[in-house]
Image (cartoon, rainbow, N blue to C red; front, top):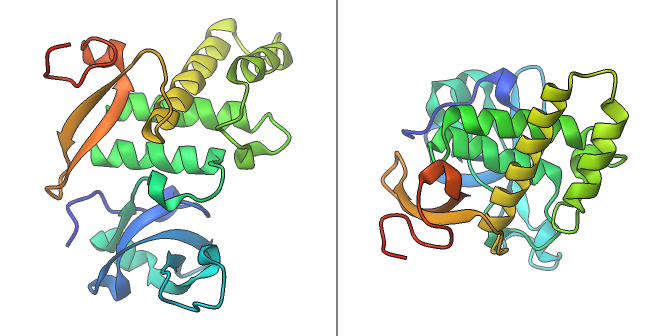
Length: 218
């Protein structure tokens, strides 16, 4: 079984990227939650081998896990991998990434939690909400609009906390997708399941020189 933290029902959401064992104990797969019903989660599994007459984005199949199976360790959050995305990344993709980073411990739990809360709060003030495209987003303009809209209804310190977390969440997410973002550093980590990956984090949180691999000389 997975060494990742099992997903609880209240943590699941439509469009969340997850890892799972098919049928609860079968093949390890990566997919996206398509819908949630009273008894379990329906997950879309992309697979280019299926329905080859269809566009690549439509090839795959649906599978289902009960909430009991998921909570017993058969499903966990996973990142939105850059090579999997042939469309512009949205706020939902960014939230899915930070949810995975929290569970995989590639980011401190408190940091990822703050990023998730700040990003969700700020994005929900935009017309497209969580479906807002991130890569073309004018982050500072969004922050200015959010600050103005919440002036007098939220404490200045709360607004500052949300907007700072939002800014860092976007920067970290875009770095993972290959964008050069000032103030970040790459570091090599080992996931609980033994895989090694390179992640990007704000340099201030790692103490490493900006633009260097943590543990290496600049």
